[in-house]
Image (cartoon, rainbow, N blue to C red; front, side, top):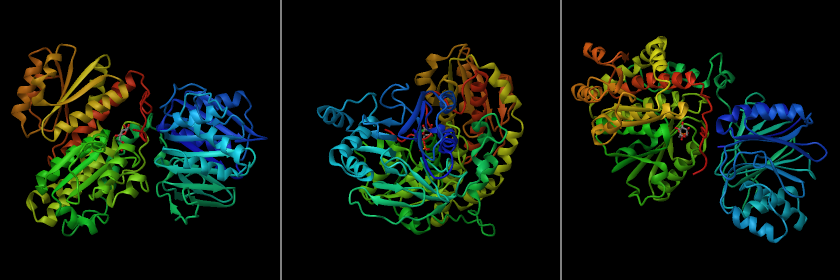
Length: 611
Ligand code: G6P
């Protein structure tokens, strides 16, 4: 939520900031703003998208500079208008700041400022921080760096901030606690941003800031210090591993469509080097040292949010089936506040595409504090969750930009299968079944490709249902989480209300909604075929319209519905991957036909770093 960029160097900072903000727009697109050093601080802010900001800057002949900061906002406190847009200046006009996160004690700081004659102009929590910095600076006559550090000591909450001060125009100060910040280390330039995508054009050398750290830099040098103790810390330089075309649309209409079509490759990448050819054993380097502890635990809890939670649900089924260990799946937002029974005999698997989701991160911290071992299943290399967990497995799906998660989900399910197989192999459990699954995993990218090479039928189905106001998705067993995911995809990007349910639960409520206007998507597989067939009949006999996604091709299905989408057959543990893909394509095409902004659906953000 919210993307921030700061630049100091020899280039035109506007260009670096506009490019960076455009890449970070997946984090929020309610408003955007830029502030630069040019005989004092100049800034432009607009409600709306980064493109609107760029236009506004062109109209105003916004000055070029070599030091600047920018922001794209996902609104928390205060409506998305120009006034609440970042950067925020203090009343002296000397400081300007961009912020990602939430200042929780903003009301008490606002009161303190007010008592001292400083009134905030916006409704945001952010403004109090820049006002506090200005207040401390002017009162105590200290340096820019010291003023920021002193103000941060007073702040409760989460922040990634970048600050400029007109008295020290060749300096940039940034700090992090709970929201991500990465520093790009270039030749006579530094770029600080919420993730690496604004940096990759200029340098591949990066440093991840850790919580509680403050960065001070001019164009040639930087220092990172600990906020509380003010002691310099040494940082490791890492390298950006992905390529530029991985974060560009490369000819596709939308990132989501590109990412759907990348799935044969992203799934193959998730497995690369992890299935040992000669003996079919699974090798996951990140788990090696902790495997014994994981297998000797009493129970496993999988925690995540959104689509990652759906992948976790599938993972729990696979682990229970293959490894015969108890697994619970918890929304991270619930887990973190509930009186959970967690201790040293529990292992937590935390799943996250971004590696930054605030609730998931907090759930991990809670589990760790109770003595549990934490395992990350993460896409973004170097992200907070990847670093916070004791060990883990990267899913290696590559950067995912579309707000609606697609390839990360299928890679998460792939990796959860690898983990379950590894655990079963070490426990010497279900070996025959496991070897069947491994064979099918190797066929998986090819089968995904088969679905993607012919999507005409799905596109036809989509045309029929663009006017639907509600949708129901039903599946049994492994296909129940798929129903949840299919419904989530549709509502996220098309704004059609959709619910996923276990097919048998339909008669305990949703059946009351069935009429001739209610499309019902059934995911039909060999397992439980007769049962789900009865559920389909329960819908058709009430006039409901049925769309069938099936790996079990039976003539009678075509008699029931003219909308039957066939997927290849594969082992049931990975069949959810194949059945989900048509649902991604269906959602995409319905949303596109309705004229919705597929990559930037309203009110959503890809990386949810607030509670
Ligand atoms: C947001 C995104 C979803 C994602 C969820 C969890 O809601 O829009 O696509 O599934 O966060 O994110 P994570 O990065 O932790 O997987």
